[in-house]
Amino acid sequence: MSKFEEMKAMYPPILHELREMKEILSTEAPEYEKLNGAIDNDLRDQQFISSATWSLSRWERFLNVESSRHDDIYVRRAMLINKRSNIPPITIRALQRSVNQFLLNPSAKVKLDHENYHLFATVSAGDLRYETQIFQTVETMKPAHLRFSLSLEYEGIRSGWREETSINQFSCPVPREELYPLNDLIPC
Image 1 (tube, rainbow, N blue to C red):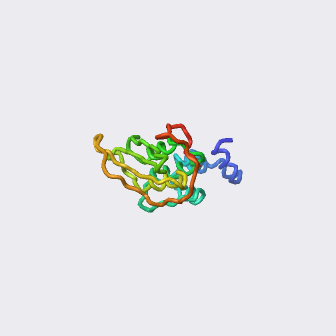
Image 2: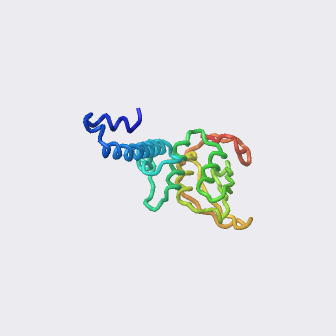
Image 3: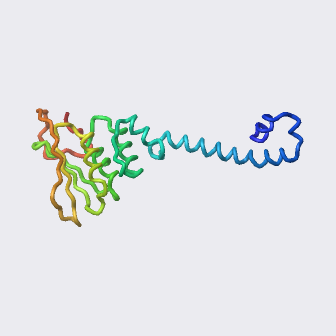
């Protein structure tokens, strides 16, 4: 049944034959169909983080993600996607992918110094936009015993390190290799 027929069925039969009523229904029926289609599409879009707009606050409550009122929609989406895909065990490549989500161009290089329990990320200075979100994301993903530092590169020249200093002290068995390959699991 078309929308026109549905709307016509809502009125008494005596009004069905009126020319004015037919004109009103023939004008309003397509508008209602468009409106229902737009509502369906918008509701469907809100079910997916990558296309959500007004439901991002609901997703943030659901995944327990804190965002600032200054964060734009793309940063909020990236934080939610990182939180949702943060399933242990974490690899160096997964950390690298997460850091790259907050850069203009994916330029992150992540390495692990197992002897010093230190995780390093080097990014191109021109690509860095959301430094705080990078630290928040890596802090939630990495094992608690590792320190994390971020280094900026200016056309191949490395600048100073910025480091978050929240570290939990406990021992963990670590294999004796210089740096972990990209697909190896980070211990603990």
